[in-house]
Length: 272
Image 1: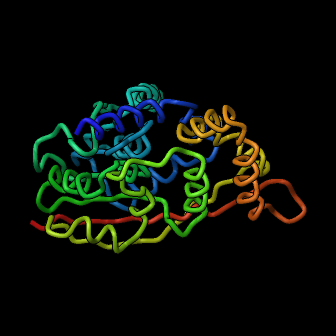
Image 2: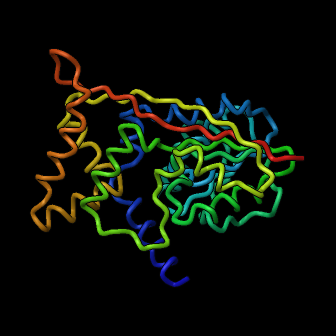
Image 3: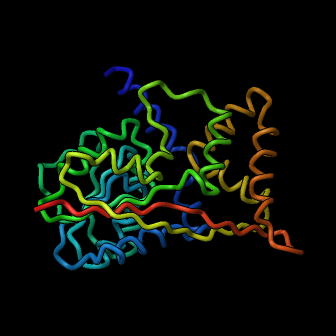
């Protein structure tokens, strides 16, 4: 357990690096949370939990829909930004520092549980799935968005992993949350009925180098990868590998790149 705790402390520090909110705003990725809230039909009065909420990806649009919302995240730095965003949006959200693998809430507390590219990064998927199901009331519903292993971000994260120290053996690959069969297996025996939807979000940057610069200065794991590779002289290789990936999506006769970031939406209903 000490090794697990140490890994989570490292993750807390990693995700605090860079400027996640700036990246989300530049790519308009907050729209994924808004889309999920609409898909789940969140209504005024629903008790909603956004797990690994980051800077309020789904929590804030759920609050704007009139729900009673709690956002939980491992990173205090992320929650500080989420609070500011909620104030700017003039909505009330209860922000709680907490672990997706050990949620600080009673069983059956929530009508709806959401996560947008969040709980996929919990190290032990089965533990996180059991917790997600535990806090959902009978008849409640779940909406989880995860990057697809077949999409651009699948290639993106595989490239980055090659420049970071390997994860401990107990860490499940985050991209498995984007695989239907894996998610079905995670929720076996929990009483959750599942359906899946494949979606994408078009992400644009002025150029492939601009995309690389955005990620390596704003997204915590990429900031860490940049720091490590600048120290050992490999950053040029990382930059080139990512540039080649994004160049595949450069518009004809232009510098800007637009790529379809594919993700899986797992929608669940807890049996009454």
